[in-house]
Image (cartoon, rainbow over all chains, first blue to last red):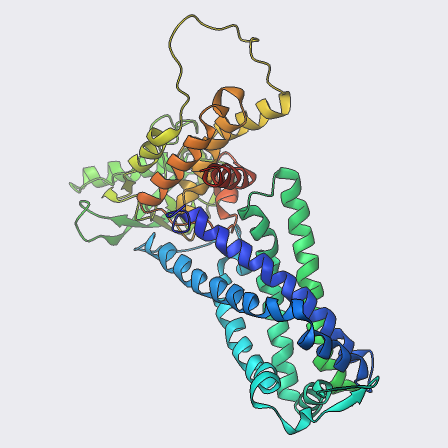
Length: 227
Length: 251
């Protein structure tokens, strides 16, 4: 097994498995976040966030998630670097728009942009909630239970700043583009595809990407438009 | 009814593997639109020979799209602007009068340039040598119907076997990956009972040889399938991944 992870397919296998894992996280993340727009008192989202913060299963998964991100990011750099080495001299004239999609050729670029977004996102929310704290997070009581007012932290940002709201929409679109290729590609890499399933997975991948992109975009837009 | 066109050609010239290459510009005139791309190259070479210049070296053999010898990266695409054909099957009617055509060799670390537009594709032979065969003891010829094979499997194996090993997949791939070629060569055997015996060893040996020779990895852009003159499906790549993972996980 020693050289499995350094073989071309082994490296892609890691990218695929970590990618699929991150996609599951994204689904959970979006589901909880959508609670933001269904209750303007914020109780529903605060309960959701409190559940995620205190649930033991989620607590166990948190370091695993961090590991998933690290593997996906570090391995993508390793894979991309080695793939660049495979063509030391490039073509003078390149006409590849007919044969492959822009997203599929620019997964590294999309990934890097999403990483920049991720860092900003962590500083704005995760870091404040978990580490530094914020006056906006002052405890509230929902259903007899005391919890941090995560709703106020999130909604204040989106209500106050048009620019940040738009950055979050751009982040969601970038993620959607990344997933439009990443979804079916991850199944292809683990060997779960044939002529029929390839088309099905590509179709589902596009739907999935659109749902994720629109789902995350709706939240900042909702606060911008309604308040 | 014959139509003729005049063209400007920008051709990659390189005297030898270690020499520095450069683009040279040539003019050809009165090229019949009914001629093939390689015939146009022949006309250009005749012109060069008559001018006491070195003709352009390019690969070709059968000139009917079945040998896989011709290559050429024409106007940014392997085998030129037409689909599902090799360069020898490309007609000059695909080009406009006065057009500038850029002609480059396959670009890949694993395909070093020998001269001008000719690249060394023995890396493919080495991959085949690593496991792209079935071992049989010679003896009497078995009856053709002795081993039952389902029709869909036979069809798909045949589709994979239509790979002519031209290297367009490597040339088209942004990573210079040979996955489409290797997957076709693994699939044509993995689908048939005769190939199943050595399936595990084969996938592992061929992939590790491919990695060793300096081909890139697959990122599923799908460019190879589109540019393949035989339209080999990337579904075969998924099968190769499956075969390889099965082989490694059973270790």
